[in-house]
Length: 191
Image: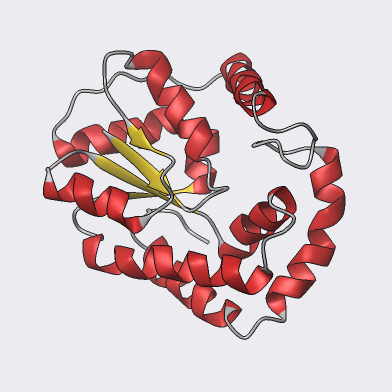
């Protein structure tokens, strides 16, 4: 099994959800590189690629990684998803919103597309909170402030507008947005 996405696209959330119900399944995840899903496809491994709107994903990344240049983050988004255009019929592309609201439906779609039988149950509020707690525990090992947590916080929300303004002024942003719109049609999500 492979779960891959650009950073800040619910990689941790879906991986932890999946692991709770499929403990014996090995998962390739969190490399944040196209080669991860390319290699999984070459081995015929069921693969999910996560897609989040570039403004949201890049904003979240820049808040978490405060020393990253905005242009580099945008170019990285473009690079990650441009490679995906050749794999749209070989992976399951899933929108961020679907992952955080209904991961069970994501796994159901994966099972149908790849003729697999991964276990899943509907997400409850308690389960969602438990996943966020697990994310916090993992983050506590390497991060020490609320801006670095891999989930929403009030402090991160307060920084978003300033960061979004910087991203929107980039000459690279329209290309990232164009790629997003090319790929979002494969998610089954209306935008």
